[in-house]
Length: 376
Image (cartoon, rainbow, N blue to C red; front, top):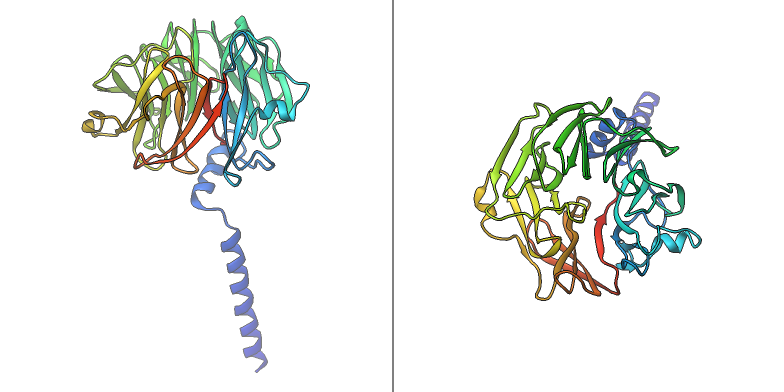
């Protein structure tokens, strides 16, 4: 009897442990993220606080009249809170009236905000939006995009090349050799950092030494990280695919033209699904003004023959135009009510697989939405 009782207690205890273990265990996707991040010194997103459950819209601001800021969309509140940087930093400033908030990205639970045309790079806590550091004067007096490389290193693209940034001190190092001219978006995959330069085109850098490994020619929109692990970009008429292991470049004709981004740099209107083998391309006309978005299903040239999304009448893409929200499998699209300018700003949320329009958020004023920004 005693033996049976002990056996029963043991079984019950084992079931309890198994239950707790199953409940508390990380899912495979989370384990993969932690494993990948552990190799680079990057911690998985552990953001908590009032700005953890949602996404941001970075707004340029009205040039000559006032600086830009970020709006926050809360999933649980289903609401858009305006100007959250200034809300949490009443005495702070994201540049001045002649500066343009053009880029923001999360890295290691921090939000890096880059203000173009003489503005600062500002770092905030990802959950509270309280400022934790800044670089007041950027190289070339014109910073564009920030890329976190590992726990202690980052890169800043600027009007004259790429600069290493020491983290968390935000010390600016000597310009990276081999990347010249107006430089924009960057992407780290595997052992390489891919950089887009007006002068040098797509450049692959060794992610540890920043030495130039290979150049792939001119490009306009870059970069998207495909579900297949490849790097995607476009030139004027083709979608470019780069294998990040072999550095082999291939291309497929788009069937439409892509305008040059270099007259007034913006974050690129190209993004990729993490659920489907699909690359999304915003077809702007000039710097803005487009109304169509294409979805290329890898290996299916026919998917480029018709637009995946055509905007509602009277709306036009602005800024990057669209970005993929992997948490929801949605495309977050930013528009204004004019082909080049407008005071009615909209955030359209589409199902990224079916193109169904799920929600429209409207905010009025001369904000000029630059790009959607999601947590890591």
